[in-house]
Length: 68
Image (cartoon, rainbow, N blue to C red; front, side, top):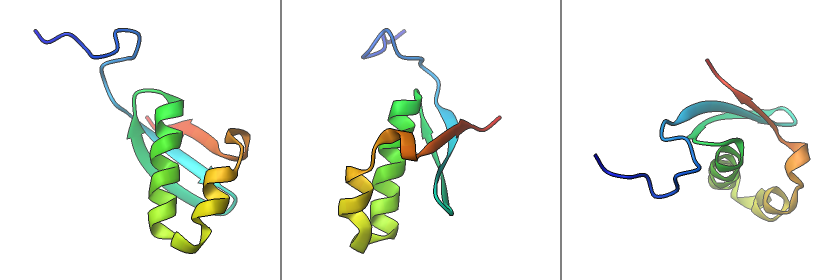
Protein backbone atom coordinates (compact mmCIF):
# COMPACT_ATOMS: atom_id res chain seq x y z
CA UNK A 1 0.00 0.00 0.00
CA UNK A 2 1.23 3.48 -0.85
CA UNK A 3 1.33 5.94 2.05
CA UNK A 4 -0.56 9.23 1.55
CA UNK A 5 1.52 12.33 0.91
CA UNK A 6 -0.12 14.15 3.81
CA UNK A 7 -1.16 11.68 6.52
CA UNK A 8 -3.47 14.24 8.18
CA UNK A 9 -5.63 14.65 5.06
CA UNK A 10 -8.46 12.24 4.23
CA UNK A 11 -7.51 9.91 1.38
CA UNK A 12 -10.89 10.05 -0.38
CA UNK A 13 -12.13 12.95 -2.45
CA UNK A 14 -15.43 14.57 -1.54
CA UNK A 15 -17.64 16.47 -3.97
CA UNK A 16 -18.41 20.04 -2.86
CA UNK A 17 -20.86 22.63 -4.14
CA UNK A 18 -19.26 26.07 -3.91
CA UNK A 19 -21.43 29.15 -4.26
CA UNK A 20 -20.34 32.75 -4.71
CA UNK A 21 -23.33 35.04 -5.00
CA UNK A 22 -25.53 33.64 -7.76
CA UNK A 23 -22.72 31.55 -9.26
CA UNK A 24 -22.36 27.90 -8.28
CA UNK A 25 -19.73 25.35 -9.23
CA UNK A 26 -19.07 21.75 -8.25
CA UNK A 27 -15.55 20.59 -7.44
CA UNK A 28 -13.80 17.74 -5.66
CA UNK A 29 -11.36 17.96 -2.78
CA UNK A 30 -10.20 16.30 0.41
CA UNK A 31 -10.99 19.32 2.58
CA UNK A 32 -13.12 22.45 2.30
CA UNK A 33 -9.94 24.49 1.83
CA UNK A 34 -8.89 22.30 -1.08
CA UNK A 35 -12.38 22.58 -2.57
CA UNK A 36 -12.28 26.37 -2.24
CA UNK A 37 -8.92 26.50 -4.01
CA UNK A 38 -10.28 24.35 -6.86
CA UNK A 39 -13.45 26.47 -7.07
CA UNK A 40 -11.45 29.70 -7.30
CA UNK A 41 -9.37 28.21 -10.12
CA UNK A 42 -12.48 26.99 -11.97
CA UNK A 43 -14.31 30.32 -11.55
CA UNK A 44 -11.25 32.21 -12.80
CA UNK A 45 -11.21 29.99 -15.92
CA UNK A 46 -14.93 30.51 -16.49
CA UNK A 47 -14.85 34.28 -15.87
CA UNK A 48 -11.34 35.47 -16.81
CA UNK A 49 -12.18 39.18 -16.51
CA UNK A 50 -13.09 38.65 -12.84
CA UNK A 51 -9.98 36.66 -11.82
CA UNK A 52 -8.48 39.43 -9.67
CA UNK A 53 -11.70 39.90 -7.70
CA UNK A 54 -12.21 36.15 -7.27
CA UNK A 55 -8.67 35.71 -5.93
CA UNK A 56 -8.94 38.66 -3.50
CA UNK A 57 -12.27 37.67 -1.93
CA UNK A 58 -12.18 36.37 1.62
CA UNK A 59 -13.02 32.70 2.08
CA UNK A 60 -16.08 33.69 4.10
CA UNK A 61 -17.71 35.04 0.91
CA UNK A 62 -17.88 31.50 -0.51
CA UNK A 63 -20.40 28.92 0.64
CA UNK A 64 -18.76 25.48 0.55
CA UNK A 65 -21.18 22.57 1.05
CA UNK A 66 -20.34 18.85 0.81
CA UNK A 67 -22.60 17.01 -1.65
CA UNK A 68 -23.77 13.56 -0.60
